[in-house]
Image (cartoon, rainbow, N blue to C red; front, side, top):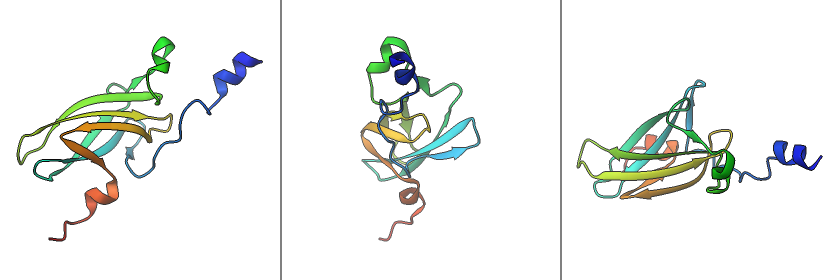
Amino acid sequence: MGFLSKLFSTSRSPKGKTGYVRREGKTAVWIYVQCGKCGEKIPVRLRTTSELQRREGPDAQLGPGMFFVRKTIVGSQCYQRIEAAVEFDFKYDVVDSKVVNGRLITYEEFTKNDEQ
């Protein structure tokens, strides 16, 4: 019984933060980053079938998420390299993220016009 309870337990995965991901059917999700240098907001489409990696076996304990991606993102304004490492839960909600030279933003922040 202990094996089955571990297998079907969802308590192992932390709860994901909503608002950071938009789903596109069953095969893609969108995340959004903002450049730390110029402030450009960049949409990033991730294919769930090939770009998101599942944590299995011994690697399952290496991070908080069930899925993860590491991506280098370059915008069109200043060409600053943005290094993103994002962890997702089983529903593809963001659990944890580390972004160098930028930050992960919500879809609401992405669509909001800058008031300057």
